[in-house]
Image (cartoon, rainbow, N blue to C red; front, side):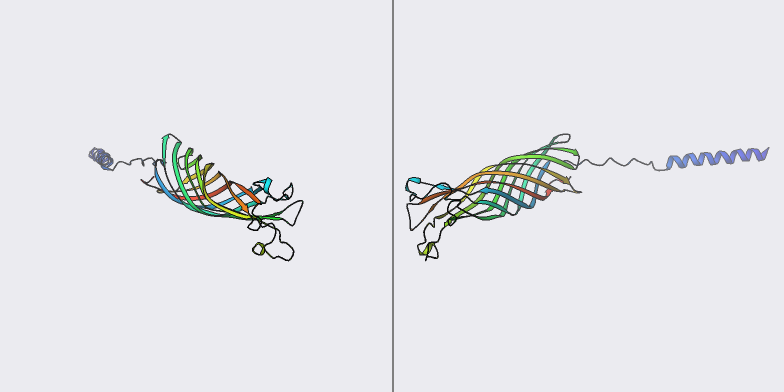
Length: 267
């Protein structure tokens, strides 16, 4: 009988001790949910890429009535200029995630460029008259709006468009060395030439993808098409001042680039 009482008492003691221990053990809390990335905020960054274009340097008689009497179809050629090269610079902007997965923002960028090209074309009637054009864009910038959709919190697909501007130069020369003369400086026939440099303003549209990295950094890939209007200049011959031509090139092209951005305020 005493053994049974002792057995029951010891069992009760163990049960009560286990209950007290369970009450004293720290409560295991569930980990907090991961913080969703927000696209809202200012950002600044750098970019680098490649630009290309193919435009015609169109040449025509500026005043056919005084063109010396020899300007006729096929006499003057218009070179097709292919420009390409590096483009890179910096950007700044602000985005607002105004609804779940929807982002709107503004961005401005300015880049140095080396988009250059040179081409020559001979007249189809008189192939001795060779027209040579050279084009160069050394500065490009935009001020754009963008509207995007984030299928996940760290991936943004967007469309963009707005104002674009660039500094371009065009030079065009017609050469037709005369017998016994080696160049325009020595009085060679038909040596019209001219050039122009100007900053032109137009528009751009494009699209891109941006991926948010851990922390406050993101990378993006972007395509832009731009149209800055036209650049023109007169061509004159110092030996035959009555012969004047006009050369005009459209300023249209494409750009692809990648960027690295830092967003103020963290993720």
